[in-house]
Image (cartoon, rainbow, N blue to C red; front, side, top):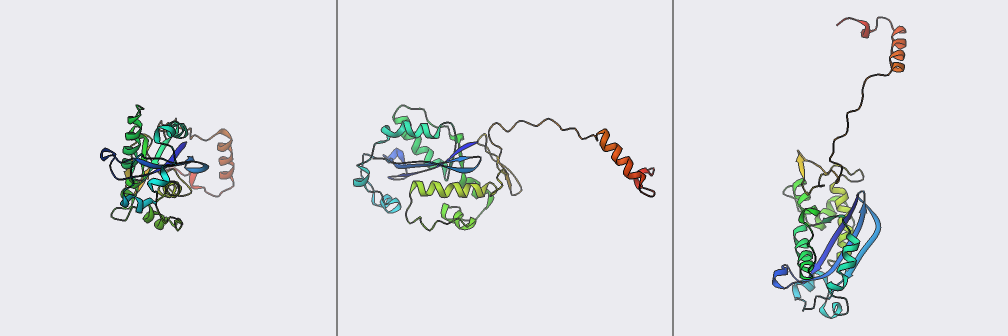
Length: 231
């Protein structure tokens, strides 16, 4: 199952206020593990960079002016993610910005139920605990010492590791998000990959003739076996 751990950096908090994406990064996952394929692109937002945003990611307007605008990279970004499920920390934020950029170009928006929100999973799994990406890295022992500033590729890579731990560590499979819906029983979150929701046919459990004969032979060697006593 192909998934994409995705992160963006922006000029602010709300695309409706004129804020834009300045960096997109993706880490490809196959059956919950990174494949080594990544996508990363700085983007010219065609506007100034507020000081508070610059303090978060360190991307200046002068630096970004030398990079393509979103319309020039939208095609390669969409080609990279394909139809994969998107793994995002605080998915509502990134999806809102991505869809604002796409719809401005007359392109279809990404469906909200295509995203798996690791922030929501973490809050359900560890209620009351800190659930930022840094906090989850500390919880799972993931080295984030190189994360001085927010950077989309660094964050997407860390997110891939956090996601793996959230769904069961090195034995993933305790997750259900194939339809954008998570179900929880106690403290266990089950995640079923898309297309895996169908029930398996029942397996036969009757003993074979060979097994019956072996069992009979074993009983003949025992003294007063309980299996021959009447109930």
